[in-house]
Amino acid sequence: MKNASAPSCRHSPRTPAFEVYTKRELDRIAPLMRLPEERRFEIRVVAEVLPFRVNRYVVEELIDWSAPFADPMFILTFPQREMLPDDAFSRMTDLLRADAPRHEVEALARELRAELNPHPAGQREMNVPEIEDQRLEGMQHKYAETLLFFPSQGQVCHSYCTFCFRWAQFVGDKALRFASSETELLYRYLARNTGISDLLVTGGDPMVMKTRHLRRYLEPLLDPGAFEHVQTVRIGTKALTYWPYRFLTDPDADDLLRLMDGLVRAGRHVAVMAHFNHWRELEPEATQRAIGRIRSTGAVIRCQGPLLARINDDARTWARMWKAQVSLGMVPYYMFVERDTGARRFFEVPLARAWRICRDAMKSVSGLARTARGPSMSAGPGKVEIQGVAEVAGEKVFVLRFLQGRNAAWVQRPFFAAYDERATWLDDLKPAFGAEKFFFEDEYRAMLAQCSTESPLPN
Ligand code: SF4
Image (cartoon, rainbow, N blue to C red):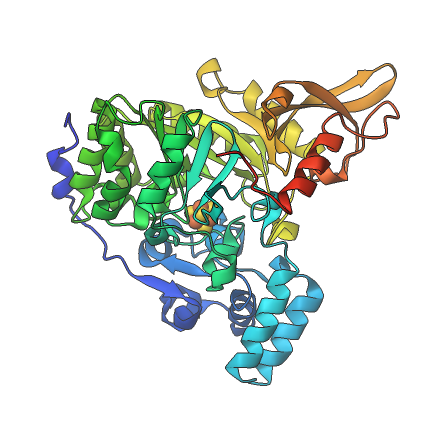
């Protein structure tokens, strides 16, 4: 490999122990115990419904405990009362205060989760591919050129984000999980679908896996002559924030970097799809060293994350984050709109405001930091970007385009929605100019109808 064995990493002055706290260990989080009892109880109530997991590094190194309720890293990882609808919060509060038996608490939690749209954008119904009538449950194939693979060992994260759109995978309900350990099926599917150029290994966070597992999944791609159509290996992760030591001092960190290096040498484009929500995440020295090590393999780090109320809903935060990403050698890639699931009510930002934040942030950075796309909604029909607000023929409209579409023919085609200051998602929008429907609606409905009985995509 090139420089992935940089000596400074092994001799870090201080590598913290990796220790995880879940809802059962809330009382072991020392700084949390200094907060008022009522606030701690609220955290407990919400953590019965939405997933909670945080590690000691995040608690001790990233969170500002002098003002936690205004701190983006605290809000990013600790549940808050307003993340649940009032009625749901009251019902769970009553059960816990009454010291109800565990099975009652869990039954209510399941009921409340089902009301939070656990599988947005038709991912269960429409995206699961098939091979010889066998559903490949650990994969999603929504866009023709990209296959998502959910390795079963990578379906947790080093910490959980309170806004996560994949939260349903973390609540212990197997019916809600995507996961696969089927390497053989993965490569059979890839062999039959030569239009797939990108394999996205995702989770959870695949970086929680031991390198030997990741290597087993990716081994066939180390051969430059095999699966030549798979040009890109993407790895989705937030480990650079939540556990940068994954790339520094974990026992198999060097082996992980050798794997990335090997994939690059085999001619694959290796893209680490890093998830960042705030410039604070880029400040730790360990994160910066980890970024340097990944880049030394030839992998490219592309940065993405949603726009979130209370965490990053102002232009200055995004501009500062994008600038920091570029100065560390990474590529700003996506600003997402918070998806219509889980704790969305707490985090959502109206589309009109999201666009203004994006535009104002873009205005204050150089061209190299303007590579991010968005604000973009990962909706059922595809990824829809808000390109702007304009007045056309006397009507104020959103100008939209598909960055990705279930039908590739939709991609890049501009379309228009009536301006609505309060809309927060594609479903809230109405077509502009008095049209009855958007151009893609009939075809999308037909796809939905077909997928209720058939395989979503040809294999
Ligand atoms: S790291 Fe990613 S998958 Fe894990 S909780 Fe956060 S957003 Fe979700």
